[in-house]
Length: 390
Image (cartoon, rainbow, N blue to C red; front, side, top):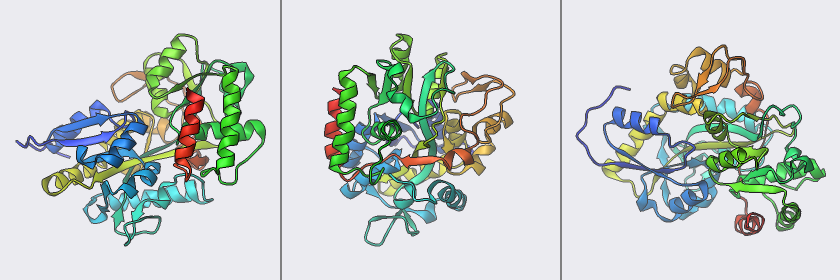
């Protein structure tokens, strides 16, 4: 996209998290689009709260599909017109492939495919319409990471509960994410499974939380983290050996020179999918700016930046043009890189000879066991989850 010279000083406000709020993306978007962009960058839980309660505070919501279960009913977002999305054909083709490989078996949790569209009754649906709840942008299959080279040992989520690491375990603190990691670990560790892995009933919530409280009494957990910097500090202080981890976190820790490696659990991954939604308050000129920003995100530069930050993108065709051959081969094809690879800010994070954990993107996305999830009993789960963290 060519740079557009524009004297417009009205800014577009984008609410989201550090997962996608990269300064390199913001600066390039401002240059190309010709208007200033303001990031409101919060942790996932706080961003959800603002999105649900204060649509006047943002124009674009940059978050995750599972959030829609909480936010769409508040009417703080408006439907996106597919006809205004320039790359929708590419997105649709990619999503159809994704659905076959990710969700053909009805993967539990907050699947993006069951809440992608808006029906005539203004409800979330998986049936195709010309209205979107959220424009798909980035996704991945997350897991846990270990300090050093012990990844061959840790081939199961149960490693998070292994007494060998007692006192050195770090867990992500979001109730829609960290609880899923703990459930996958509990399922493997105890041999017990819940009726619906993406929607626990109250007795099941109590069972899992009571188990975690037992570990807490034994001081098994070193921390529950909001930001990757907390994990970095704990590792440097020799307090953490193993941690549930986002790929963005892996890149961040590698950037700091920490020797951390992602693991491949035999039970499968916890999947997530992100996208862009538009505030119900965005009208007129602001609405036009929002659509221009959404379309810009699909042009390739943002996708390449997110690839270097550890994520896959919903339209890899546009992104591939912005990646070097070794970058594409490592991140998407799961091949050994012949050269050092850098993050979006130019810092070396991958050494020559390294291979992406879990193989290529088709293999990894086919091994998603559960999506991040906002459950029917989310409020109850969140209250009980706080008991574990306090």
